[in-house]
Image 1 (cartoon, rainbow, N blue to C red):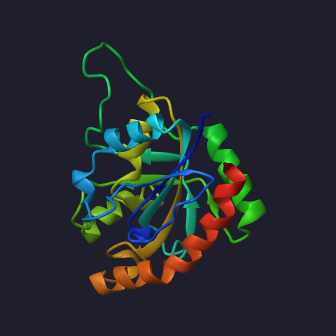
Image 2 (image 1 turned 90 degrees about the horizontal axis):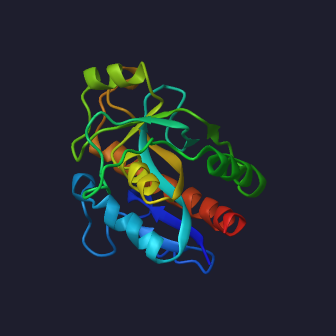
Length: 215
């Protein structure tokens, strides 16, 4: 029977989130941490297909591009910007795909969040993907902030791979920090890691309620 795949990111790396309600996949690897630019998104999404899944709920750690999107904010984006080439599943055939979050599945995720989690969720917004693993300069962030709400390194490529393989895909993004230069502040790695640690309890609690409702 087709089911739900939950794809976790750096916010929950190292945690055991195995659930009887879903196929759990850690995009950064279960052992040694795989850096964002080295992730094989097609292989990850193919494993979801092989497990009998037809939809993906992804968790992504992001930086907030606006002062009001501070640490601990949850966002369910409805669009993305990824200017570099994404993964391609069609190596031996003539084919094209239209990328994006699957809206009916995304709406179901938003409704389930409101019914089961209860905390605020920003419904919509654009995710700007960078290659990583480096963070962004203040000048880059100013450019991004004119067109997007959050910035990350994985969700757009993962969404593209999922769509090419026939998987419906939606993401919950959790803000770990304000992006470099937002509010005229220089980001430090200590701030980023502190935000990640502070989010862990809220993220795991949200998944505990959300995943059974979506399975």
